[in-house]
Image 1: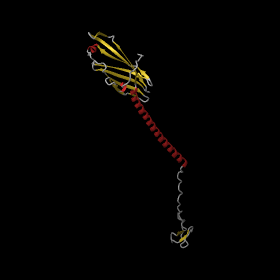
Image 2: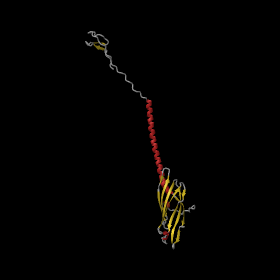
Image 3: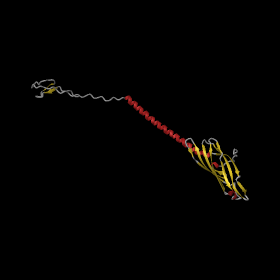
Length: 247
C-alpha cells in the first residue's frame, strides 16, 4: 500500500498546505478535512486442513485396495486349483472303467423248459447262465450296465443279454449273471457240423461313476475273437478264470 499524502490543496487558490490546516494562508478559504485513506481488509483465513485425517484416509484407502486385490488373487487361485482338481478327477473317473477286472467265471445250463430230441426236434427253450465276478480296484463307486453279445457264426446263433450292477470302490466285487436263451427252433436249425470253438464276443458298457465333484458317464466297447484268442478292454487276453464258487 502507498503512504497517504502529507499535503492538500486549497479548493479555491490551489495552494498546497499541510494536512490539518483549517484555512488557506493565501486566500483565507476554509479547507475541508481530507477524505479517509482507504485501507485493504485483512484476508479471511481459509479452512485449516486436518493433515492427520487425510493421512488416515489415504492409509485406509490403500489398505482397502490391497485387501480387495489380494482377495481377488486368492479367489482366482482357488478357482484354478478347484478346476485342476475337477479335471484330474474327470480323467481318473473315465479311466477307472477300464480298470475293472474279471475275478471269476461260472456257467450253467437250465434245460427244464426244453423238450424233444435232436432226432425228433426240440420245443421250448433252454437258458445258459453265465456269472462273472467283476472287481473294482479304483477309488470310485460306479453303477454299471453291460450288454454282452455272443456270436457263433457256424451255428447261426447270436445271443445277447444286458445286466446292471453296482461296483463298490476299493476292491468291491460284483457278480452279474447273464442269461442267454436258445429256443427249440434255433437248436433244430443248428448245422450238425457247427464249430462252437469259433465265436466272437462284444461287450458294450455304460457307467455312472460317482466322484467328489460330479457323476461321470463314460462308455466302453470291448471285443474278443476266439480264433486269435485276443481282445481289448474288459475282454482282453488272460488266463483261465477260477469258478465263482459262491454262485
